[in-house]
Length: 401
Image 1: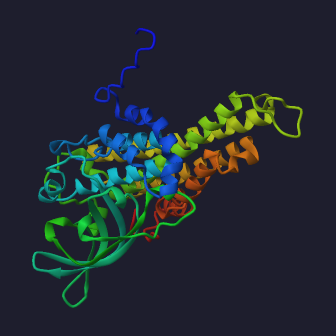
Image 2: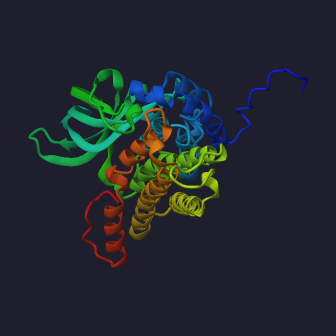
Image 3: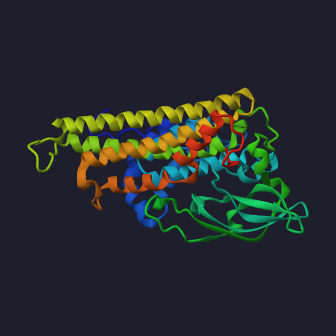
């Protein structure tokens, strides 16, 4: 290359999907403050992710998507989390919404993806709405908060209770609805993960045809309505797969914090009120960094084990056993706990300067503290579920396992 010549653009098509994500970390870091301030992922980030094909990881190949393993999904979201927690969270949940759509009948899948395999969707699993039986479908009404990704989505999957004409409960389900048939209320005013724009979706008497309604009860048993039973990805265990989509960004935040602290130490700063002209020379710094790195490694090992376990059971064609599903939830809780603990050590290494308004570490801290409190990654709940399963106690604390 001649002096002064422009560096060639990365070959997106030939890069691995995690490699494409890693290549965007710098952009995401530059836009992280703006994403938080605007309470919405920066448009530049969305365009770059779209160009890299990182919104279609779980879209069926026959409809133009990647149809990748769950492990790839968590690898990608972990890379993105190094740059911006909100962007990683939003991207991961858009991708897992694509996986959910892949569980639906072909007719519903084609309605979403036939024109554009990069079409984005969002999802809210809890049944905050009702679907009253109507001719060949249901009339859906409700309010769904915490709809991460809704500001960038054209479709939404909404949890609801299916009822008969007299209001009798029939099932729990997910309704697949165009976002333009819903109202978005600006309700996302929070301490962390501000950029996810996880606002509230509102439906008022929206008709949803039967082929766009998925039974959650059947899904929890590993029974999905897709006609393509040979597609391994769409045999993955329902709740563990959904929970894994939350874990990758959390690990990425801890990894990003480690990189920022190491860069600061390499710049040669000292430790105030000590004789250490360079903090990197202090045994306390070395020990805390080593412990933080080990915690991040532990989180990584548990995350990848859980993803590999889900992928392996999907490939086997068998329903993932209860004890394996609860172990996956335990692994995800471990990711949350170890990522938080690692960040705590890194903040101590960096000191009070971590909490300056212009320090990205304080945003990472707020994002990780918020994200790891999601109910589906709660370490205490996961521990209780796993312990019950190990003891063979059939009475579990939730059906969402």
